[in-house]
Image 1 (cartoon, rainbow, N blue to C red):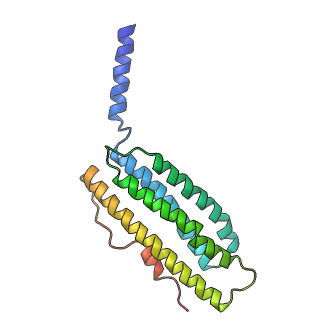
Image 2 (cartoon, helix red, strand yellow):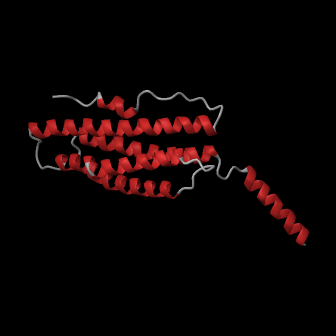
Image 3 (spheres, helix red, strand yellow):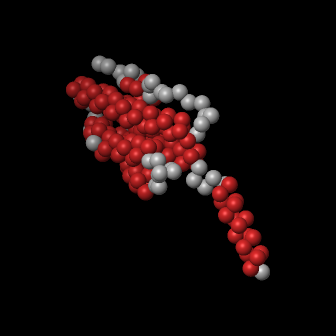
Length: 180
């Protein structure tokens, strides 16, 4: 009976080792999925601000802030992969910026959009300026994170095709903010 248990234990250890419990791909995709989810919500918040949709902005703002805090905490508690914390640290920095942008810049935008009635011309100009600044901050943060992604993939996921990005989705969105 004990040799059977020993054999089962060895098989389980072998299965766990072969399953890639903490493979670079799983580590990478987990962090990137968290980042993508936040990016989607930040784009959506920007669209609500663009179309002055106060209700949509209010509904999504709190959910996104909670998600940003949760993701920041989860990444902060992650163990580095193979003693390399490059991607983890870049994600912590990125999620910290997302949280700061939500608590400061998007809150200011939200307060402008929440004003009753039509926005005055000065408020519209301020809103456009704030949105451009917001997208520039997000673009800079995304570029730093993308560089860490590139280095991580090059180091831990050889054979995966990847080119270092020279632009970001947020950078492309800055150009779409209308100027008055």
